[in-house]
Image 1 (cartoon, one colour):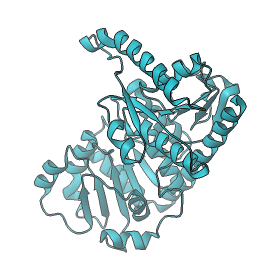
Image 2: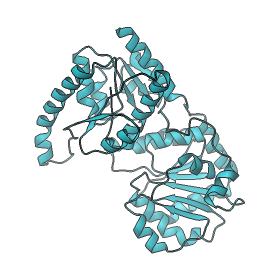
Image 3: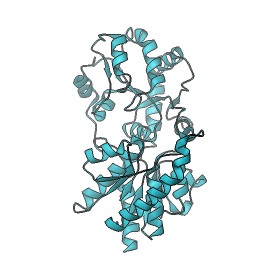
Image 4: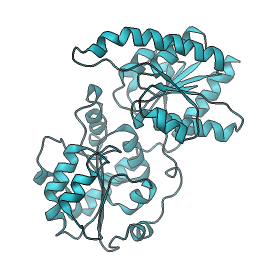
Amino acid sequence: MLSGGGTGGHIFPAVAIADEIKARYPDAEFLFVGAKDKMEMEKVPKAGYAIEGLWISGIQRKLTLDNLSFPFKLLSSIFKSRKLLMGFKPDVVIGTGGFASGPLVWAAAQKGIPSLIQEQNSFPGITNKLLASKAQRICVAYEGMERFFPSEKLILSGNPLRKGLDRSLPSNPEAKSKFGLNPEWPSLLILGGSLGARRINEMISEQMESFQKWELNIIWQCGKLYSEALKTKHGDLPNHIHLEAFISDMPQAYAASDIVISRAGANTLSELAVVGKAAILIPSPNVAEDHQTKNAEALSSKGAAILFKEQRNSKELSDCLQNLLSNPAEAENLQNNIKALALPQAAKTIVDEIEKISSHAR
């Protein structure tokens, strides 16, 4: 049984782990557990796995009616988790973060079922911190996590990658041709997540007139919430600038790019390390524990990325990008340093540990 959700950062690692288990054990049976009305209830079935939903949500930072209902949601979710565990009888339970994984892993521990949790960020979420004492293994993506978790349980695994990034990317010229880009120019990839990042979009939009004067290809994933407004504002863009709500073929997009401007979600950073791209990271300040800033700082402190706070203005971002384009040696240094941090076998490492704790329990 696997649980993780609320955001793609929790869901996609769980799916990648399940895919690796399925590759090793084609007859294995799986059941995902998520939070009702969250994106995992759609994404997991699309990936080919069954899922059950719990009535659970996080605690809001300010006093709300939702907070008053939290104890009832928690008790309901623990009760349903116990019922699901009794019916499915899993050999192991895997939690990848998000509020739904809390009741399931806790209930599994009460029943003596071995569990593994996977933490994607350099600063762990509250759910995984609370579950640390219950799990047999804790797989992490950053060094120095002994600050938060028992060292004897820690495995440095990295974050499981989405399909297509676990093998060689297309060549840069081939990928540029696929997007219809100018083969002689460098390419910028802009990522704000599947829903988009409002502040990144604002800064790029403010500088778009200047960018069109540069010899620069642009692939801009703006998110479905902002796509129509940006397309209306900028009208017909030249062929070397692609404005997309969502990019489904990320291996092609990474292959076509030379520099990336991105949020600092843990899975995106793991992907950037594996593909070895020079990156300007603009962390979202609106996430729990400000973990994106901590993720970006973990890379920038090693010369593996440039940290750019979103409170700065768009001209400063343009200057930062221009400096990187004008200094190929600096861009190459960033590429080499982030590549050195890559852990491309994360899913395999995690499933190796799952095998150990599940076989030990038999």
